[in-house]
Length: 388
Image 1 (cartoon, helix red, strand yellow):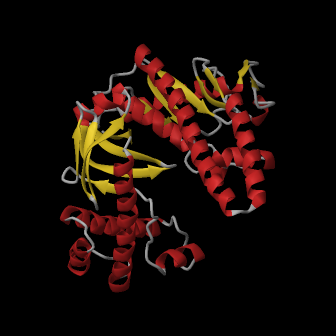
Image 2 (spheres, helix red, strand yellow):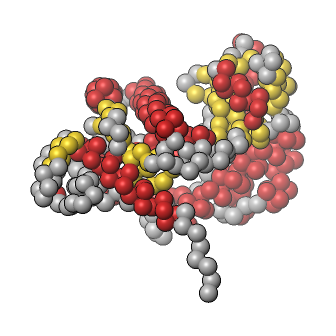
Image 3 (cartoon, helix red, strand yellow):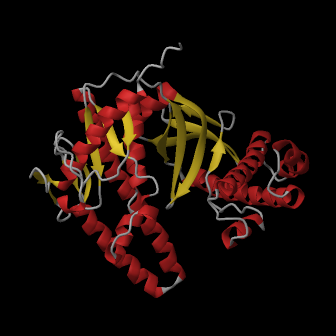
């Protein structure tokens, strides 16, 4: 299982100047290689062809052999990703303005875009918590990094492959890939159904409710500040808007991490699996009131599901996604199962029109998710029929 660990670099003045000179130069060179690739091969450049055209020039500019190879490969990977997005329709249909714009010009790399280092350009000293990294000013040794004890343990035991050098908000980071062995998934005794929402971010079939009221206040405050900055329409205001957007995204990821960690810990302790609703395409399928549109479109529901899935895999907890249709309108009583929109008279409450069962609407949805997971798990693990 591939995961990443982020460590913070703490360079001194000399080391910081070397890094500040190297990363923009790498991205400027990548933009030049991208232009050459687009002029000669369109969107279909290969590493072999680009190496013949650009390797010598990159070496003449002072890039090492391995650094030059990484620049070329990075350009080819960028065009490969662009072609994949075009095939998948992520840039619109053929002839759409967005797709025409992407196909009509070469890819440009931002001055501080992240760059990849392999073990030939970057080496780690875990005992001293330092790295040795290649730059245009020569190799920097004894560049210190800081991380948590848990992250350091993961790096020592599982780091494998390449690492990315990132410059963000005036700070330097290394993002390292680690390869963790997944434990065997245990046979679940039962399931925990998780209902995702806007007011209540996650509600389980056990009745645990992770509310988002404090988060909602924070996001409304951010929205007001964003509106004030947008009204100024200055260059510095735009820079602050980008900075605030990154901060809000980090805050949302932190909240999702905390909730997912709690749910997985409960499931692991009670030997139960985790079931969530498959909310793919929710923004296209669901119509909400005008004041709810921003909240629906900005909260990362998909990210929360991804966090629960990968944390469950790391803990060996079974995980499954089920059909979300009518989970908040169906009566959870086994002998009833009546489904009607009137069963949910308002956002918070559920009352079955047939049998009279009443409860919190989000908890009822979690129970229905759990019930569907029980049936789905049986079909998923059903042995293949014996051929006659």
